[in-house]
Image (cartoon, rainbow, N blue to C red; front, side):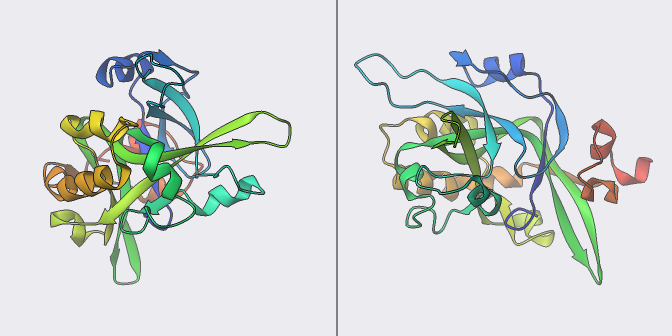
Length: 233
């Protein structure tokens, strides 16, 4: 569950993401994955501030899911920072610098959420008919061997509409119209955060969902069958 043990799907080919997000340059993008857990390498979209007067370059880059800030002593910090609560991200030392100047989009085909029913939990797949983009943050961390690790976190907010019947939290899904402003390093970070959260409920209302097999709860399970409706199998 987002805010506790998130899982999502990213199987759209990198070439499609390049076109969809108007990418200028790309790194080595990980293969399709239908059951992504935290600490996995995932694709993210970033648009860092240029160091001169040249225009910003939008990049599709591989990043570790679980934010490791520049000041961290150890990579393990990221295991508890795969989500950031939108309500407090701008004030928390872990995330506040990234809110100001290192905002990202995390492409996803959809995500899994578990609904508690009595003593059991039932998984649902939440999606649209095109790739989504979660509001994310990113950071660079210098590893012990001197190389740099790019990492990311996904912002969450209070669930609304039908999603609230499944779980109290949901990822902040950024609409296509808001993507440019969210990535723009010249935009005020707190204002950009407020804007994407304000429209998150309306964006969520357009999403579809269906129950899936409980196999998705195991990180060892993988493949497109995980997103098929449970009743069809």
